[in-house]
Every structure is written in structure tokens, then in C-alpha cells.
Image (tube, rainbow, N blue to C red):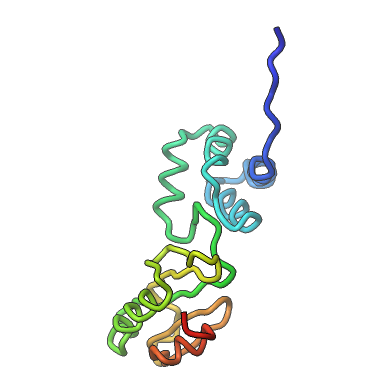
Length: 159
């Protein structure tokens, strides 16, 4: 009886390409994970065993790194990612109220994506815009002195 190897998914192929590119580096796990996420937008659960096997690590070790670092995602992000600064300087300028407003308006918590896939809400602990807090990053663009009404304006129509 011959065994049949199941076809590889595109995600598995991406992981194998990242392993081929970064596997021989010193401490290759983070570069491999970054490469996979850059290509796929996230680290799908089904590639974790592939990466673990390729680096001679346990699945638990790879899963632990993916879930420890907030920059790694296990699900695809929305079309736009909104990051709100939660550092002390922004908190002193009203970030906590802005956070509550954003969660209420979008109907999601940090790390979640709106049901329509439009917006992912994330927190960050410094955007380097301390003098103009509260700071918000919408996509790649940084905004300062963001009030709840300005937040709504940045995202377009009310949700």
C-alpha cells in the first residue's frame, strides 16, 4: 500500500519558503514568523507545526512565541488597522476615554476585527508622538490630538 501525501496549502508553502530563506540564520524563529506574517497577513495555526518541524522546535514553543508577541496575529487583520497609543503621555491627554469610545463605535475589543472586515483595533504602548497625544495610527498614517469626534472623522461615517 502506498501512502498519499496531502497537498500542501499556500500557507504551508509560504512557511517552507520562509524557512528556506531564514532557517540557517542565528535565532531564525522570529525572522521566519515575520516573513510568514508579511506574506499572509497573519500566522495561520496550520503553519505552526511546519515551522516547528523546520526549526526542530516543539509546536508549543512556536505557539508560545506567536501568542506572546502582540505584533503576531493568528487571524488576518481588517482592511485598515487602527492602533491607539496607551502609554502614559497619551493617557494623561485622554487616551482612556478615546479607547472606550473606539471600542464602542467599532463594537470590538483590542485585537479584534469588525464583522465586516473593515477595521482591526489594536493597542500600542508608544507611537513616538507623545507631545500630541492621544495618538492614533490609522493604516500607516499617524495622527495626534485625536478626540472621539476626530476619531470618527478619521474612520469616515459613524458605525
